[in-house]
Image (tube, rainbow, N blue to C red; front, side, top):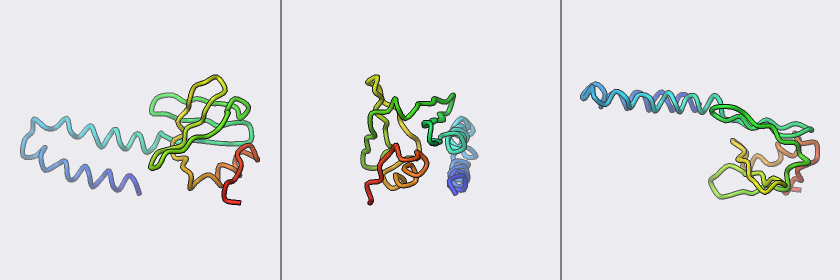
Length: 112
């Protein structure tokens, strides 16, 4: 569904590109958005969590995560015991029960 929105954005950007060919670099925006949709994700299992970014990925064990932090309208962030933070793409407070099941009990379910 998100790729359909990018397709409509591309159609909307064709208007200024056809009117002013100098604005052709604007068509890079839908390409980047589509790549982000395909690439950004969080994969969780009983051993840990893997975060895929636009370029590269990072795997963290559940033992190394101190807690989760949520902001309204934003993806969750994992507080690491080392003091850093790791953004978890596509993980929000609404998807927390799914993360609880995937983590094998490492993440408590607040809806119970």
